[in-house]
Length: 131
Image 1 (cartoon, one colour):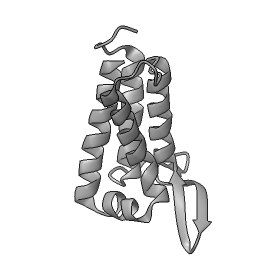
Image 2 (cartoon, helix red, strand yellow):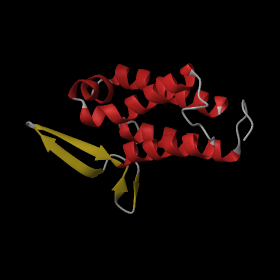
Image 3 (cartoon, one colour):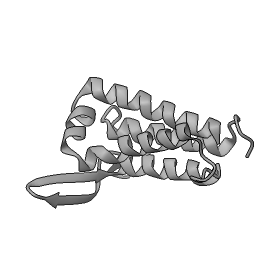
Image 4 (cartoon, one colour):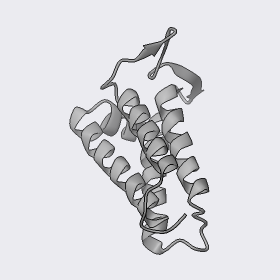
């Protein structure tokens, strides 16, 4: 794929990411055959803290990995800014289920979830564009 362009697959992955993000933040209640975006796929419990990995989080993670794979973004060819964007987007997707402070700041706080959504979506869009 050429750099600084968007293709059909990128738009699908970006839509999947936004759909999963909206669902994981609880802004959209979506049930299809009794399965919702906030349904738990896996539960981790350690040291008195229980975390849940939801379908929305899984969709976001799949979209980020798909963008990185389809755009041939490897660490050897990525600039420092692209590496930082990939880490920031990945951290904001993966940290709320595993880090209690990030869960409180992003998922439980409406302003935090709006800021996280903007950063995540902008970061993924920039990764697509740079790829």
